Length: 396
Image 1 (cartoon, rainbow, N blue to C red):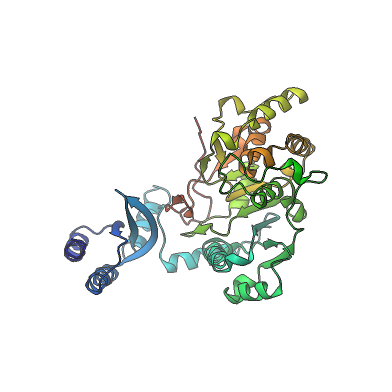
Image 2: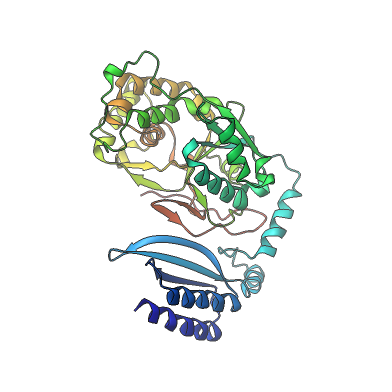
């Protein structure tokens, strides 16, 4: 059946594209153990699409009726230039689809000619020795689709287990232009807060016991309390994970955008935590508000199981260096919630934002081509030179 479907698709796609020039085409293929014939027919399909000007835009894996599937999205680069021109002439605004190489290169050259000062910003990852290939893919996608234009410093934080051999091996996987932006920074071995004993720490947590190891909770403590102190000279921090993948040109300087909007925190998606993983956290935040006589911001409207999914997290570093956050953090540490309930850095920071920041200072980046499973957003920001495609977040 699969072989027949691909054979039919080769013919149908060619006829459809000839009669109706499409800007975008999505094809879903089953992820089966392919026979030689299946591979041959699929290759024929891709070649036909290439001849028609349909080039691969992005891929995404999923499950349909219990079967693993691969979705491949193509974009017609032959007519994209005409459409872009049409949009400009008719004041329809930017075209929010991927641009062909010549448009991207012209965009990059224009950005490089700008004389304005860049924001004082860095991009950082926490890296491990057993994820070299994954880290290299994440770094290459970030550089290709964003930092090749803007050239922000990239800080790779690591423990002493990530030695010189691992550094050499990782750098050998990267292009020379990307290597020039990278700095390795050693952090102390991840461990418990000062004064805390292993006697107070259960070996596993009720919340997600498979991931509720002491090592994982040490990482949550580090990302909550310590990580930003390792980059104190930068005003803006963009945190990415080693499995954060960009899929299309970002199209604008996200740090400059945050500055111009007056935002302090940006995210790409909202995820959900199990109740066991946030047990008592938001009650602590409410008590903190009352004890400080603060005016809470949006905590009363917030679903306590929702968190800002911070594998993509852009923030003004002063937020985390503030006396208010440091006092809140001390309450978190005193409660032992990280080690008792496995409170993660994402819910801890979300709860803090909900009591300290107005909604208009928090931005949802809906226009990034970005993947961190299970979340994916294939829609990229448009490429144009004056201002980005601003979409403001309305959570209600």
